[in-house]
Image (cartoon, rainbow, N blue to C red; front, side):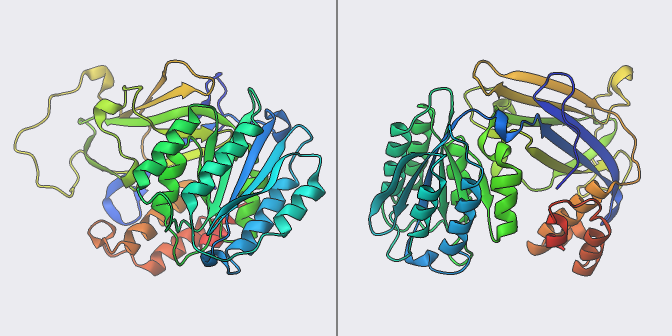
Length: 393
């Protein structure tokens, strides 16, 4: 929901940075880093071989489960081109192929296959995934997009019980050119961590869909981002200047943290970024001389060279080209002074504050109440073409 500039220098990424006061702490500032991948129209995408893998177990038998999945998949069917292919696999007590690889021109046939899906039984996710990969190999398109879209509430209670084995299967299959996207539905048994980690292992992406508006965003408005990868193993590192910043903390991303030495290690897997995709990182920083969260150091840090002392931080982005090859590095110093916060930064701050309040972590948000957070979000809605900010409020 943020407005970041597209790259203009031939790089796969555009980088936006902003520094402003923190709404919950008068002694700190927020640094917002925005990454925007190069975009492309759906018509420019390579031919796609898509396998819909649908959980039809009993836990999906609710309005926000299988009925929403069926409506969601039909939105994607409307976007198919003649050169695309679609298969449909379901899993519950057993797995079966509902539709073998079918041309995108046969939309009526594909919709009819989706319409016949019904829910019932326990969940055997692993065997379903194996069958989906088999269909992906049968319909494989050389130099095309070969992707499994797994739609489930994440309740894998039968089959391969070892999650590491499930992830390893996705890792092995991606080497053959078949990636895995996970689409989460439902709330009761939902396992977001499992879904996100499985998509990471499968070189795909993850989205949670709770209504048709979100489905349209993921599979229509942002279809290129969902299907087309522009960079792989994308890593972001920020080095703060001790002459300007005494303390800092990254808000969120707890399950995506990397060791410092892993940043330059091309063998360490990281996330993929799709066409037009955006990534936002928020750091709360304590400027030099301001009150922080820790006890003051007895000994000062080594002085920074004069020509670099005005820099706030150095941003580094490492990535591998989508077509393969060695990793590339983008470096950009961050030097701007704090400004009046944009709607983008203020809304991001409201989301971050709400997340911390849900965790009950008042150590950082201080006296900022839920009402304060809601008021901040409402005042920062700004240009909201998909209604995402309004939905959050």
